[in-house]
Length: 525
Image 1 (cartoon, rainbow, N blue to C red):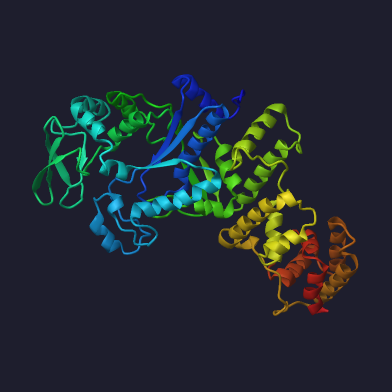
Image 2 (cartoon, rainbow, N blue to C red):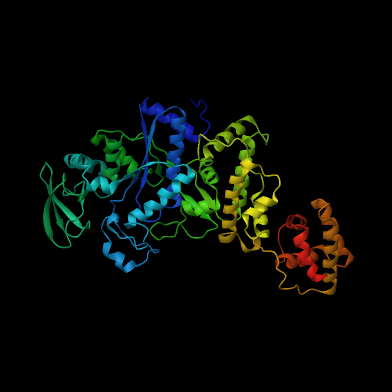
């Protein structure tokens, strides 16, 4: 059993045990409406729950981790990124499971959004039990909950009115109905017979129908009633919420009162803040389709670093996921944490314990913490190697003679992420490719002579010199031909990569190697 609660996930686990008592099984919940792409901001709730679940299990507790797809919600808006938008407009106001997936990913629009998440989550060590609310509602699993809400209609209305500027009318009912004529929610509940019969009117067609809530799949509780009903039904002990839900008078405030009507109690909660994107452009919006999802982030960050981004930040703090040059720093920060974990970096005791716990929770499999650090090469260096070798990961690994067998798999994953980042997000000034020699540099006689001298120094001294020592030969080639160092650096960069700037020159030339440098420089000899 874990004794020290040094991480927020451990602190939350201990709070749940303290407030909910010693239980045979604890239920931790999360969920979302799959009305659009489930973006990385939504993932914050999922990973927050997973980290608390892991902390509870490490304390010897049995935990049920449920994830509810609220896929019986209404299709309110056609996202910008969907094919055939005119056709999809016909399905507005219907359940999102009734909407066809015009992308051809799955049998319906909601399922297509669900599938992408369900495929990605195992890669970051998240394995919830999925609950599909459309299936639950349409098979009348919640019929008792719906009837309970109808029986306590006045109580629920009073609770909701506490936080409303305009009170709900006397004709309000705590249930909505999808019309059996049109499948749309453009309906008005007229009456309830006190048992199982509910009468509603289809406002579009002006038709009236009485349905049995035990046998017909048309009824659904509104969000502020549905949420507490499911807390009671699933016996939820912990569920975090975004700051929009946990503001004063928000859905959590009303739900923690309404849940008592259903015979339950509110779960322990935790407020999490929103996430921004940096270096990608645009504001995340599921309905517009302008988002980054978990799959996008996993293209440029390895799974353990995706987890690290969330593990290392308290849920209540806003932070940005970077796609720009800050990617280099994030990898370095993770590597520092790893060095501290393995005792390769000396820090004070308090920080060491915090960083060690962060490292443990960042690993995809909490039962398989690495026994040795990964290959500790700066991300920038790996990017340079990849560009020198035109993205050939096998050649990059072969060029590193100090990689241990146990590090290769993690190094390969990092190189894949680095190459993805170079191709999609790296700034142009960061990118380069070695000259093929097809286009020669337009240079002065003095510059050509300096390149020739540099070629001789490469042949004679590159392999036997340190980076610092070889930089002196670059300076000498410039000085002997009357060139300023800065001007000559530009000439060499243009000869090697077609740009006036690039990686640190002496280091870069040693990485490229004598053979390839001479192939390029000999063209000027």
